[in-house]
Length: 137
Length: 379
Image 1 (cartoon, helix red, strand yellow):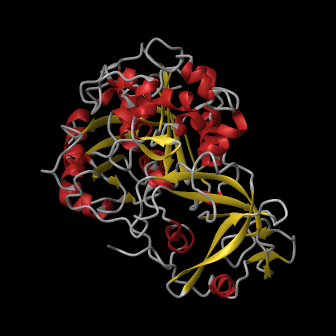
Image 2 (cartoon, rainbow over the protein chains, first blue to last red; image 1 turned 90 degrees about the vertical axis):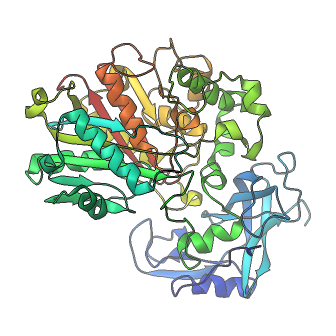
Image 3 (spheres, one colour; image 1 turned 180 degrees about the vertical axis):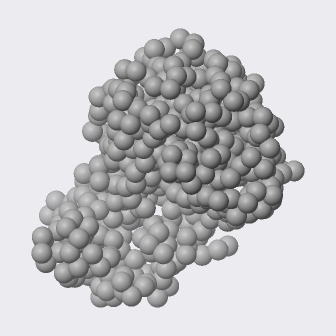
């Protein structure tokens, strides 16, 4: 059985993965126009400036949309059906992720529910995934 | 108008399950059929366009064509619409006179086909694949729940997209699935990626087709009625589904459509027949709204009310579409072919006598788009 896909960082994405390894969700923003963005790249997608910096995001997010996949990717056989979600970070950008600490069912996964980042080991990589951030937690 | 026409158009002899054909064979069979349709020979062709692999060099060489113009634009299933657009421009510029555009894909049988797997250091390999993305069913589908929440699209309305298209497929002997289905049948079919059931996902088939594009001043020189390329558009949004600006609308569809309608000098009210790339049941909904046929949020009820099925005001996906006719992986060629047949009046499920037909192509997962406005008259 083939294992789960493991990301291989590149020079432009390494600060993101280094952040994950340190337990932080580090993303980029433009120092000219202030736009925060994801996925890692050396140019601001809003204004085209190359004056960009890394910062540590809050890790807070909401559930923007998802599917619950019944035909597992290699290595995901024991998890199916599992949600493939897109979350909206409190800072604005969206990213794809998995959802942990909650049953992956249409009844449990309610759009716009609050989430927070946590990290899951995948080989040498720490992968950002999200869990419910309920009241009082 | 662009000054170009489609002078020849044909698909492979059969579409569906063709384990006895390589992908390259499907290109060549489609090409020879399109040449015969136009009454041309290989030596009449001086421009070539197709997607890699096998790409324009391989296809041209296999046919003994020496191109003086080529286009290998490969931006997903809409690429062939972009090839038509680029060919029209090349013909106007004098860079080519007669362009052959081919598609062949062993999408089901995988004979001589390449495997798709993103490199683990690619953007997709780093930011999608680790989350269990495995083909289009697991990514192209993700925006739909957001749309359903924002606009109240119901599971029944989403399912009915497949029901409406099956009604067209029932009239098309070449369609893979022809038996009538109900909304209940769709909702009872196996769950693939919630909220999408099997019958809301496109087929996976083998097949091909080809087009011959030349200048409109030669419109009377061919055996079949010329199909005029009245307007064309293209655009791109994002390589990652998560980065789509708004999950309830396709920017690429809208911009490509606006460009094509502007070039053709038409509005949605002028369109008699429509093809919208339907890899999944939500895509025609996004397409109808992006092209301005209905307002945002109205496309689901519009289809459910019967407007796009046989007898409806706006015939849509009259070959049965990717959901019921065929879907090799890069379906755009088949959408163009059906528009050409409808304009010529030779479709299996002929929808009246359309003067203007529009083709909306999708590439990747809302990543790219091409739109063609085709007409019976020069414009």
